[in-house]
Length: 307
Image (cartoon, rainbow, N blue to C red; front, side, top):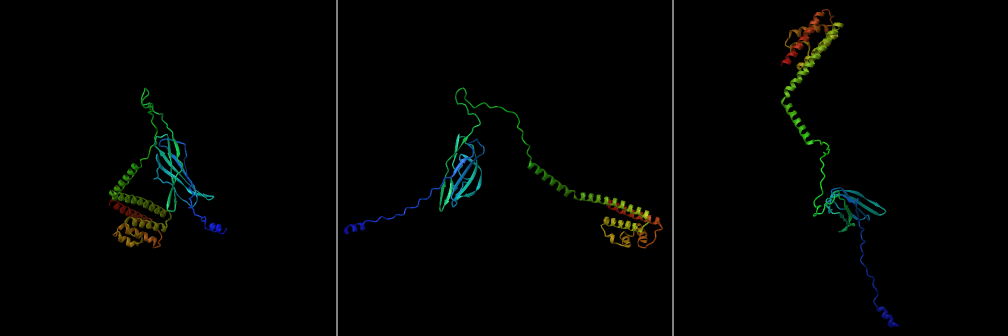
């Protein structure tokens, strides 16, 4: 009995070995064409969906991925959506094909970044059928050999007229350059003409307003109208000669115009009425004074217009 127990004690005891953890396989993405058939050169959409755990870093293919036999046109991507502990990434690739195979397939793999490893997870191949729009050619031998007969159409197709932007921009630039050149070349003559036009309009306005004041004086016999007529005359000559005649006294104005007899006599007559508070008795003298002032203004205008 003692020997049996000793033997049993010396028997090797079973040890518990630790088995390495097997990584959980990643789910496969889903890829499909959004239409069953396509034509040569026509737009074609391929949808790639991948549902995964929220903690995975997933990278979808970009424009440099292998899309053969298709050509990449564009991509529409959607933000990651997470619900009930699962995240969904989705993108739609806009493609087109010029291959003539009846059935064409595409597989776009998804990259999963897991630590220092990068795993490629590929969906099942998606298939699309090429729809032909021309009848197949006949046999290469026999009585029906050769391409099919072509149908002639000489009807003109309407085309919307296009606006020629480069031509109109060039014409606009040429017009601006020509206008700037003409303005630089004829600047002085144009300026002289404009100044002559302004002087003529101002002179006509002065004559009309001066005649109105004289008429009002003849009706009212008021010294106020005499003062207004003289003030209008000073303002007009001040603008005509570009001087400060409006601030000059009558004596200074006579000196400025080199003792002109008409100006001296007219201002002396009007000053006696305006500043001397004298009653108006000699209407003929005032009428002559108004005529002298108007005549002198016309002479000054004519001299400047001739120069």
